[in-house]
Image (cartoon, rainbow, N blue to C red; front, side):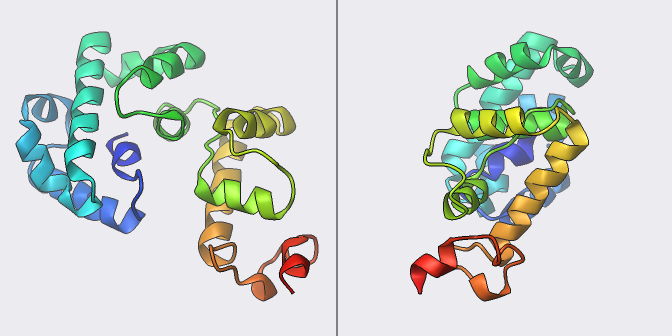
Length: 188
């Protein structure tokens, strides 16, 4: 869950370094992280960039977890998904993508995660005309069976597509969707 907050506007490799730092500092458990100062959290999450803002967001989330669920993750995981999503979105520093990542990957609740990779691929495939997070999430949730493993796999495949082929400067000729994607023909 902390990784979902730290990955905002950074590469996952930087998050892995920060998570390693948190582990080394014994700050991966709820209670020690709750007791830690913002300054201490800033020191260990620095590799992620925007570390001052992210440390505040981490602290806000941990305070929320303590206040709402007495620090008990199982209590939080047991909450109704829609209700938990509303609560997560009320935490300063947690937006749609972060909330849905927490719900899908940590809480194991079927909420589709929309990220920059997803938006870019869908725009190039001409499947969407909007940048609205909620409209894109609804598009997926209405189009796919509501299945946790399917959502995880589909999202992972879109991330991989975005990292390997559908980059800001795309590698269309090697992309597995080249035959059906209109984007390469538009850029010729």
